[in-house]
Image (cartoon, rainbow, N blue to C red; front, side, top):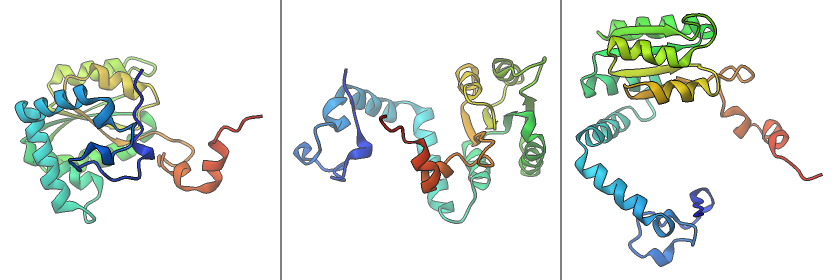
Length: 191
């Protein structure tokens, strides 16, 4: 089994032509076939080309100025998306209402479906409902761990996550990575 570990690379040789500058665990050495296949897709798939170009433009225009919601609006407009779906956890109903109002104020048709559609949490049902109404992009708003995976698997439209549920950190899951106390408490130590 091949293992790649870009996170441990200090060579910064991603764009270097000389593979000898890269560490042995570099994907350019260990996953060449996968990268070649990705390269073919990037130049031949019109959707991939359009998303990459739109992301580049939005990123350069809004970098350091726009919050993620504004990037989402601009990205959607430039992609020609008109119909947006929002799959949300009922615990974030109020935040989702604000999001939907913002998106509607920019001319988008917004369809939203709660996690409790037909009773308990039903991420497959959420995806199927948004598939049924024909959304062109779906936004995740705080679905539970695992439910986000199921929703993404069954959504026909592309999916982006706006809010990741983390009840402990007020929906800021990166906090334990930057807060030394949390980070140290999460590292498993040998007994």
